[in-house]
Length: 435
Image 1 (cartoon, one colour):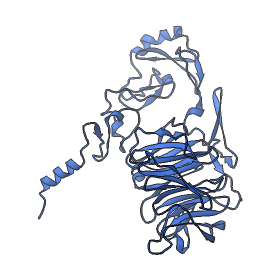
Image 2 (image 1 turned 120 degrees about the horizontal axis):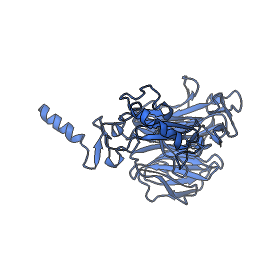
Image 3 (image 1 turned 120 degrees about the vertical axis):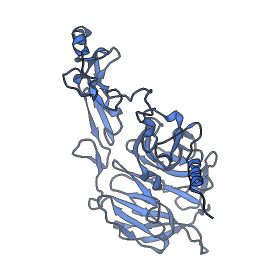
Image 4 (image 1 turned 180 degrees about the horizontal axis):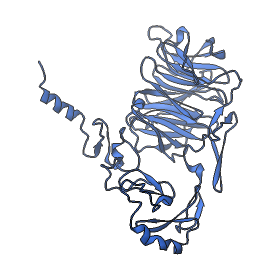
């Protein structure tokens, strides 16, 4: 029995048809809400929701201070290049008879720094690190510290300039913007631990080499986290064929050469359905998310466990801790959102619950107080601050959709683990401050 080609085509079109309140991206696979069209954010993997042909009648994207946009294209031009005798815009929009007609009006406009002529008339502009004030004439300082990525950690604004700095345990690099963790001890390189169904692997962040930390009890590791200062890794080991069942294990990994002092921690709650784990490196407490939509915490010995959250927690997919601030962050998929609460489960707050479909992991920049997560459906890695403000997409592409629910932040980089036999949970073991 064979299906006619016409029916196959109809079945394909039916499968990949968006509903009436959605927009189908150019890839003919991704559907997004029509309310997301032409809002300045590229939500489709191919960016077709912000393409000129889609947004022909919408407001053009904003250009930086002192710049204007060439019509119909995403090209910004500094105002001092208007009417300078050179056609910078493809259609010559920046040049023409208006240049001579309006030029005398610049004399009377009263600009603090400079004046240029546009098709609508003269307009003021400012020098590099300044922007026009409310009157359109006076110049005021631009606060570069409000721009994401200007500094990797701390930023101090000054009149017409800014300077970057680093928190304790990090050193400012030659670009005067990025910070690198100082080795403590000096001969220990930054490492990334990767747990999969076969073993736990150690990979130096400045090298492509990988070596396995062999142990019979790591062959079925499901979740993992690291205590840097104690040189300790903890993981949940699944043994479906033994009486011991699912166990929480910890071991020291001196110099990442192998496991020593391996031990089992008896936990009073069942760990059989745990999907995520994070360790409070101040107290040693273990925080768990299970597939039954609970978040619970156990003390470092496993004797006392308490359920922190079990309401409106559908599809738990990621957890991260900031013990210094006493905050816990987590993501859910069935009611997709990014949330924050105190580490005792109190003061629960939604940080992101719009334009989010399938968040699958979460990690923190403890120095800059930023929250990163990946959205497998939208193919984004995004970031907000601890209050849910200043949201940005920092990476977009099909690689995101193949990631496991594991993200780690190091220095000024976000690491995402792939799904598959070679991928799994990521554990960050770097010099500098924990974690």
